[in-house]
Amino acid sequence: MGDTRRISEGLNLMYVGNIIAIAASLCTLLALLVPFLVLMTGIAILVGGVICLVGLAKLRNEHGDYMNALVACILGIIFGLLSNNESVFGSMMDLAQSICSLIQIYFVIRGTNNFLRIRGYLTEESMGDRAWKWELISVVVSVATAVLAFVLLPLAFILAIVNMVVSIAALVFYLSYLKASAGALS
Image 1 (tube, rainbow, N blue to C red):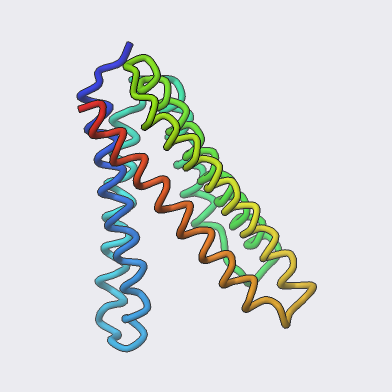
Image 2 (cartoon, helix red, strand yellow; image 1 turned 30 degrees about the vertical axis):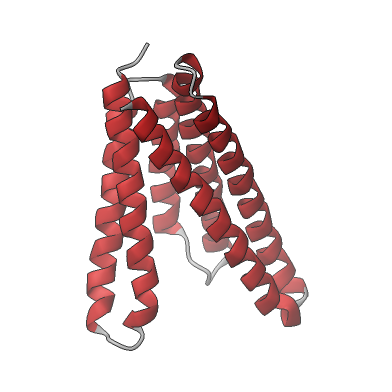
């Protein structure tokens, strides 16, 4: 049936890891002004990613969907190491990383919603459904932006802004869901 305390702890680790990685990513903008921050933000992004990975690893035996999410996360890391925007192969690896990230989020939400539904936390379950829809929209907009940027170069900036707004909205829904689910299952 799953240990709800362990699930709550794992989800909370994923939440904290994502918050650290997001904060560090935002600090990357400041790193353009202060070169020392490049090293610090790189370390913080790595720490946030590791904490999120530890949270997933902690959840892997609680439900089959969490193991699927962990596999998608590991594949995403591998694809991320191979990605760059300088070659077609690198761009394909970047796309594969985005797909793995989407699959990871899908399985985390699906596994968590299973526990939420059993325990009657329908509000948190609906938050997961909404978070999943926003993540899916975010990836579709991201891919469309990348494709259209090649074709319609003048619109690339506008498309990038739209992509950023949708990605931020999706992230807010997902993080809210992780926090609410961790609290509900604690």
